[in-house]
Image (cartoon, rainbow, N blue to C red; front, side, top):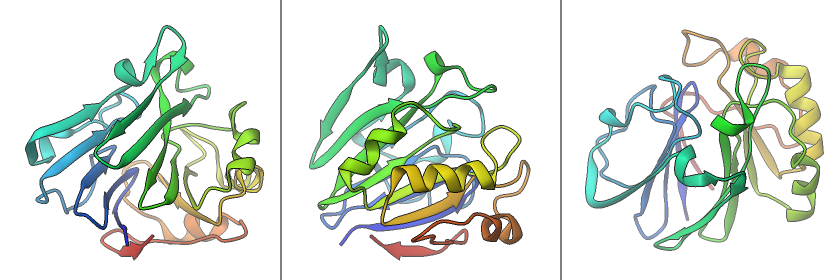
Length: 196
């Protein structure tokens, strides 16, 4: 069974049952000592792309926006047993051409790593995919706030939705997390590891 470690802010680590280590938007928290097989960066803002924190295996693959979005086309990848599909991410503070989200499939579990975004045109199609997890930003300053994120969670229809990226300068804010409402809401605190 895959495991997710929420590191705080927009950062988390996924470890597959076979031991593949994936970091998404490295910046916050601890847990970077596990050598990475794969690093996904949703955009190049400094609170999402600090890959210097990561110990990398010799064949570590790093996927950035420049790899995931080419000539307006969102690309897909298969790294080891991990399927990765880049998807839209954008809002007033994040240009569509400079940001992506990712849908990962690991150990037959689908995870939507939204990155920094508000509602996107693609989200309405995600419900048909019956995603297992969605990780949505809810800060209301650089991204959608809790109310819009709640609406997006309903639109996406994942079994579980985890609020992340809550307050600038803070890795986590419980009151903000609790203000996010969605069926299957799952509040994960920094340092907490959950089974996927």
